[in-house]
Amino acid sequence: MATVVLKQLSKRYGGSESLAVDSVSLEVEHGEFMVLLGPSGCGKSTTLRMVAGLESISSGELAIDARRMNDVPAKDRDIAMVFQSYALYPHMTVLDNLAFGLRRRGIAKPEIERRVREVAETLGLSEFLKRKPHALSGGQRQRVALGRAIVRDPKVFLFDEPLSNLDAALRVGMRGELVKLHHRLGATMIYVTHDQVEAMTMGDRICIMNGGKVAQIGAPLEVYRRPADTFVASFLGSPPTNLIPARFNSEALHVGEAKLAFSRKSSVENVLFGIRPEDIRIDGANPHAHGEVLAVEPLGAETILRLRVAGVAADVMLRGPRTVSAKVGERVPLAYDIAAAHLFDPQTQQRI
Amino acid sequence: MILGLYTAFAAGPFLWVATMSVRTTTEISLDHYAWPEQWHWEKFPIAWFKSNYNVYFENSLLVVLSAVAVLTVIGAMAAHCFARYRFRANRLLYFIIFSAIIFPPQITIIALFQILVQYGLYNSLPGLTLVYIAVQLPLTVYILESFFARIPSDLFDAARIDGYSEWQIFWKVSLPIALPALATTVILNTILLWNEFLYAVVLITDDAKRTLPLGIQRFMGDQLEDVGMIATGLMIAIIPVVLIYAFFSEKLIQGMTAGAVK
Image (cartoon, rainbow over all chains, first blue to last red; front, side, top):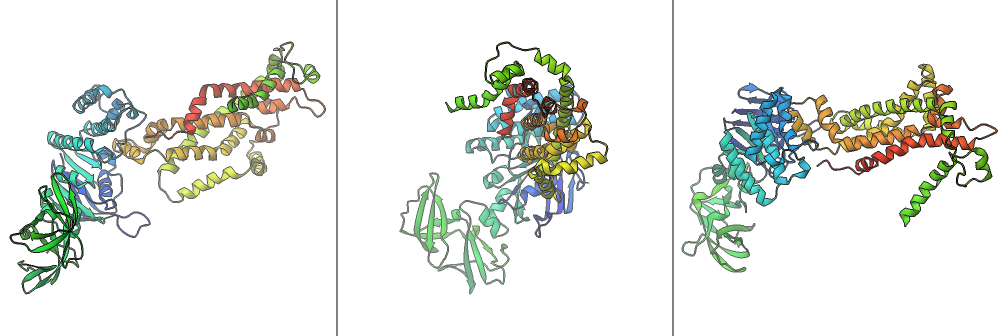
């Protein structure tokens, strides 16, 4: 168990003008499962590699258990990393793959043997110890990669998109196993992914990154319900949050042709009205607006409607229960759940 | 069918030389293509002992083995660095080394000759070995670099986190994974150098320092060619190559078509 503290961590690659990672500050607590989430190229993997010691730190400070780690080589940081490609040594058996790191650390042979067997047992790899990686399935290789990290008993586990090479069914299973593993070991884990479902279901907290910067850090539901800016609002959730240009006029908010009683907190007149698809209802009793159905996507458990709302340029998405039975071309009454909506400043993109 | 034709095409000359190697020159000049009436096996010991072939064979073995050993180690290290480390002028250096492949040996040989004379390495086996290493290094680096470059860098990162130094990673991760490619370069270099003639003929003058391809030349005089003994000498030179192919051809093909790093 350990804490990992990133202070204004930045990374600039040689010959590049812009920062790949721009002043990232983050505190990962003892035993916390922290997810770094963002689109590809947002700097999340680079951040993780700086924590691992595989990438040099251009500026800022990294501390593990209050010890400055900037110049400590990867092998002395007491971390283990699981790679997207698994990075199993192809010329070694599963047994050797698991033991490779321990042998370097001068641990006695019987102790290595014991730890490898124990980890193989818990991961269901005992019968494959003599096989080489190419004779294993994707899921088994994933387990070996995981086992190689566990057997080391490190202070911090780092995961770099470990599940993205697995097929969908296996991924859901491994997700659950990783959460169980985290509970059992109680270890500090930092997990990089671009998959928001992984982030939402596994993370104690999520750190959402965009363009090398931290956009928001918080518990999964907190970031989902109270996005700090338009990027988080539209990155999390599928379909993403509707961001509708709106205007304050005489203490009412005009969204398209609808007038919403919204308490005005700032002096900004033009705002973006952000509302999640599930916070729009079809409601004939008390509608705020009407929309023409452009497309219906019945997903089984729920139904997604694409709507054109008068006075709104972009299409509006609605996520309703499976009982919604609208037809294309039909006009439906819409009610916005104002308590769940947010306003964003179109200039700064920040939530107001 | 085509394979059969090709086999005949490739094996024909070999068989012809093989038959001639057990016939005397007089027999050969009577009928070039006849099957040996008497098997003159005694020609082999004559070539081996009386015509110094034991010495040539030993010289060839010494030069080729040491050149190939050094080539493999240095080539692998260079290739590992080119493929794995980002440093200034990496591609430039690689290009310079690689571009040496395009020079025909005739261009460099005069310069090499003078350099060797200056350093007192002319007409010596270590000198020839050094030249062989220099000549074959670009190709070796080229083959190995393309292989090393295909090893995913995650593997090296994993080994670094597992606590291994760059030096240990080279020996414990890079080399074992690159074994098929290493086998290819070893076999290729061995065969090419075993048969090498031009550098040897220019850089070696002492009879006692000749390599096998030069030894064969010994039977070619200005006036007379002992065709029968040339064939015998050729067979002695060819046999190790054939053996290498027989035992390692599978590895060779593996290495040439290798991509199985995943």
